[in-house]
Each structure stands twice: as structure tokens, then as C-alpha cells.
Image (cartoon, rainbow, N blue to C red; front, side, top):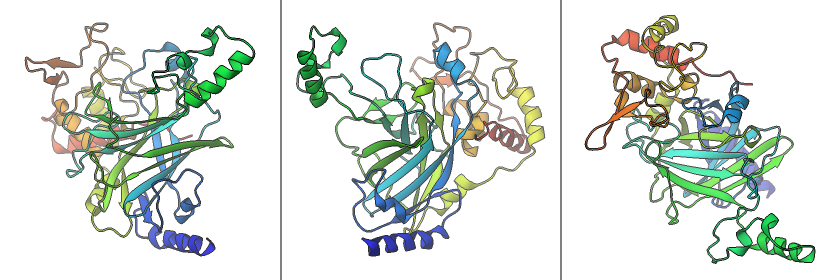
Length: 401
């Protein structure tokens, strides 16, 4: 074991000088990484890379209390590692959380901490990556989700309805309730791990046929969560067996009633597989810094965006008129922002309930069911103005605390 650890640590130093500092390097190690968890010694083979996740503010949740609790959320730093055995790849995510929140099956108002890892099903065109969070039409994503839960009372495949009922609704006492609890513990589901595929808002579908296998775990210690994900490099939906590929992360804080779209999430981050050729163009593109005049971009945003979008301290527009841009720079790539400016219908954000907010429809639907954004194209802006506007939009993000 000592010799193995020496090899792993040596490999980490060799690979550390080969990869751009703001990309995640996946070190190849001996052995099998398909079944490792957050506490495995295999993680000693490489070092952490910082990834920043930002409050998702595009759409508010329909929960006044939760919105108030998360109104002033800061960005947060995740620490991420990656290792591969050549057939499988594993990720370790570590983040600070002052409270351990477990989602219990007997409560409808408690929410669990959790994390998700997202991959695009296709990244051949690195300038046309999917929209972060839910993917977009023609650009699907696979999302691996893990939540911290207690015993979840849901169908367990055994036609056992009795032991899926809350114990407070049982006509049982003393020894009988103890026997009931034991049986529940044996049959209930205590690991909330799901895999989804999505191609835009309201299209997320759970993959249940086992074609996208993975293993996820979470452990909490000393105010920090550690979560791990292991999956094959190649599966029915994903082909990560390349020199590099994009990845994105999200975390939920159950203590602040985080769930669904109320979360912190990253932009697309490049993963470089050490020792495998290719992928440099993708890494360079994801690491590329935008160039432009941020002050002129702010002026252009006031002239062209503020009438519909809220952002930063600019709140001239009605609250539900268009997506909130307050953190758009944190979880959007330069290419996505540019595309949104010149081709807004490329990715259509569904918006709020069209019946509840009839005056603020974010898209129109034609006779074929195709959605067209109500935002006009700003293709008429000259190239310099577009670049300046993108640079300013990228500056819209919360500070890390």
C-alpha cells in the first residue's frame, strides 16, 4: 500500500504542470475507480481544483420564505478532484456547509443538502454547449443527482404499501411500533440517487433502465460535505473517453430550503484527462477571457436590457418580465451570452406560469409547437458593442464568501 501511495502522489506532481490552472485534471491511476467513495485513499493521487458556484437567479421559486432566505446568497467555492482508471472516471466534490440537512420522508417542509454533476451529451461544437442547469433543445445534458435523505417512503418494488406509510399514521404502540420501525428500515429507500436527461426547461426525465450507471455517495464531517460520483467513461448517453470534456456542478443547502432551481451552480468547466491526447481547443475556449470595455458594456445594458431584465442593482423592469441576470456571468459561458444577444430563440427559457403572469410571456408558440423567444435579436449591434456587452454581463455575479 505504501508503494502504491508513493506512485499515486508522484503521478499527481507529474500531471499538475501539464494542465491549465483553471481546469480539472483527471489523473490515471492503477486499480478500479468505479466503486470508490468520498473517503477512499485513492484521492491522494491528485490535488483539489477550485470551482466557484453561483446563486441561480434566472427564475424565482414559488416560495416567499425560501426566496427571502436566499435573497443575498453569496457564491461558494467547491474543491474538486478527478481520477480515472481508463474505463471509469470518479469525481470528489468538497464544500462547506454549516448545517447537515437531511430530507426526511415524514416532512413536507424539510429539504436535504445535495449535489449534482452535469455533462453535455455532445460537445463536438464547443461554442454550442447546452444551457446550464436543464440543457436546451437539440443540446441535451445528463444530470447525476445525489441528495442527503433519511428513509424515503416510496414504492419499493415489493407491493409493500403498509411500510411506506408514516409511522404517525399507524395504529401501533410500544413493541409493535418498534417492530414497524425495524421493518421500515429494512425496506425503505435511504439513498436518493437519480440520473436524468434533459433538453430544456420542463423536459427533465429520469433514466430508469440502467443504461446510465453510476455510483454517488455523500458524507458529512466537521462542517464539510464530501460527495463522490463514479461512472463509466462511455455509456449509452455519454462519451467522456476523450482528451477533454465539459462538466458543471451544483449544490443545494437544505437548511435554506434549497430545492429544484433554488441552488448554486457553476458554468461549464473543462476536464482534461492526463495522458490522453486532444481536447486542448475545448480547454482553451472554456478558459478564454473575454475582451471588451466593461464600462461601455454597462451603458449598453442600461440602454438595451434594463427595460425587461433585472440585474445587480438595476430594477426598473417588472419582476416577472424576463429572466433575472444578477448572476448570469457566474454560470454562463461567453459563447452562450453572445448567442443569447444575437439569436435569443436558440435557447428559450420557459418562464413563469403563463396563466398567472399573462402580461409577461417569455415566448410565443407557433402552430407546430415551436417556441420563439419574445426577446428581439440584437444582431444589429456592431462587433465591439457585442463584446463590450458580453464582458459586462460576465461581470454580473455574486462575490465568493
